[in-house]
Image (cartoon, rainbow, N blue to C red):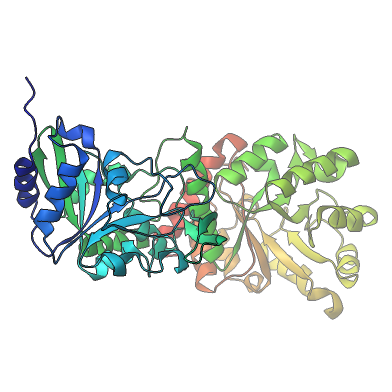
Length: 494
């Protein structure tokens, strides 16, 4: 027969967790986890208040209302029996925030919830969550895991986690008027907070005991926040699930990567020929990894300028909807009569052409205001430098090099140790992120002769502001290439 849990049992358990008079405690609880509690939710609340005493404070989450307009005096919470009973108490103060409301009873209750709805963010500075840290408060989990710990959103907010997004809510203000407000950096629907439990236990930040049938945990707010912020500096995906089938985790990781690419001096793009066969696959691959730029070369093995006009427009519409920007068009041959129309149609400003094109044709395009990147094709660095430096002064300002390491390896040059250290380095406007052998066969990054990590590193040392364009060995290797590129950036300290 199950033993009934009494108030004294709860008080003893709370003291085993280190709770004492004067503590300010943020409580997440599942009443049912305790077993049969004599007096139900009110007994648990009374036990909490007795332990912290008149100088302490108990805080519970009080959001999750179905009401379109949040009213502190009427809106119910669906977070469980204990929060529902707690906010209705006569001595409880409840913040007006429609998305992150808390209720508090005790010495610091009124101060904790004061102006929560006016704070810049829902969980950061100026909110009850952050103020608990300032008080040296504690987190208490009664029969729930870390996934229920709303306080962890404070770490995300202070770290400006890239996947946080603005969210709008409506509430009744102190004058009785309905207001609608948008809060930036708001937490999304899914996190892998429970993945932190073992680690927090190992580093000694989590105390644990059993109360009735409930596993109870406590943690110090300030130390928890400081420890998490330190990890988030180098692990921005710390809270994100690794489950590839959960859409929330996929777009959250894409947001993290997008923020990383934006912080770099270079602009990251992918060559459409190597990012997927069909436009849908190209868009999916770029979106998945937060890549916002594409070089239009081929789609479905068809050069961009050979694709039917209506189909090109359909492709471009799909890219726009996915917020992917065409930054350049790469043509296998120079076709001056169609260049202007293709660039205007795509909204791009740069044309990539092979070095086999006539210098006069390249100069003519550049004089007409086009940005031209000349890609090395069957030519060494010194000869290509001669070619670029032979351009008329009026044209040379609009012409740079699309540095293709694999193509330099094919003509017998070491792309970094030899080619880069010639005059050619002055002209680089684009680096293809590729690798392969002298035969031209493509390989995974750092498995060929492109010396790609060395090239990336030296250009990043110069705050290179041009394009890095991903070219995997083949479209199915796109994900592997992006992740390898990311690892290389981390290794070289970018």
